[in-house]
Image 1 (cartoon, chains in turn yellow, blue):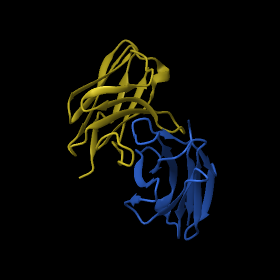
Image 2 (cartoon, rainbow over the protein chains, first blue to last red; image 1 turned 90 degrees about the vertical axis):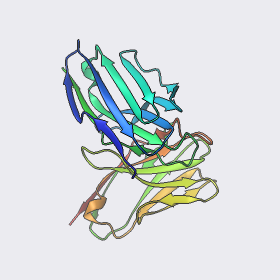
Image 3 (cartoon, rainbow over the protein chains, first blue to last red; image 1 turned 30 degrees about the horizontal axis):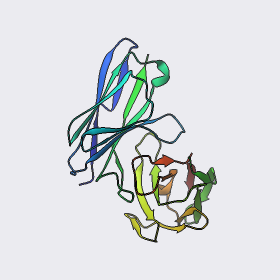
Image 4 (cartoon, each protein chain N blue to C red; image 1 turned 180 degrees about the vertical axis):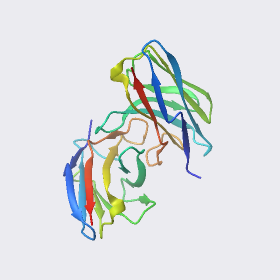
Length: 114
Length: 111
């Protein structure tokens, strides 16, 4: 089963709200990713967790806060977002970070900031 | 560094063939191909590795030219279901962590 599950599928939040995106995989993968995708653009890497430790932060603003509670779960905490943060947020996972391992994407969470 | 994809868009009739190219200014170790339909997540198609190893899940072929630092995705006898945006992703040697995607190629297959 090659499945990455994301919730919620759609989220509308105000600029003063605090919300979280959740991601889960049960493939035993040890690398998990957050990507951001704007309309008609490719996915852009935000964060990478490797073996439950934050490995890469692509200079993402602090209003985005990732968390990896265990090897199967990945959260993205959102606070004081801006309208330009509205996008599709994709969670992904791979066996580990070695080149040649398939990266599997979840269906994404559509975020609208009003 | 972002790989360059060509063409940016292509329109086919059902049954026709298409080739999508992905070029990098840096040496390639692996190239990952994905297809994304409108409003959906990217779906994995294929990985090509330096040295010729190829892994995929669908009946789509691809090539990896190390000297040209280029990969090509071949879609033969296209079906309506092939429509979507195709992305290639490349990463530094031995690591998937910082996979960078090209801008995408929009493929439209008409009846």
